[in-house]
Image (cartoon, rainbow, N blue to C red; front, side):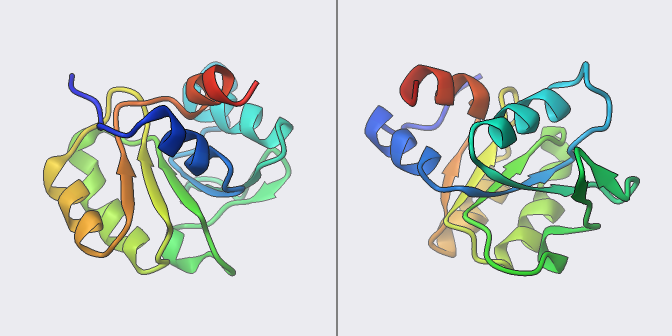
Length: 137
């Protein structure tokens, strides 16, 4: 699968942003949708879980959708299958994040283009944990 064309410097700049909403964050510690945001939380990020099936994950209040989160969001980090990304991004655009980050294996050109038209940078098919370890350590 292809990957976005951002430079390491751009990815580093994105990773310097701290307020991250995690769509599809999981309570299951064996899933990337749990251990990636847990790693980010342990490395100074302000994580907000978005999972309509949970009340709280890692001591953080869960929200049904990004647009219901109080306050600003820098990055919307998405752990959903590629074919389920479009409505998530349509909702995320309402919060006007600086970056929408589609985790490794996730890519949806239509949704990504919609976000870009709103002035939002889009990262796709990259893991925030792996990029953080590669560029920020």
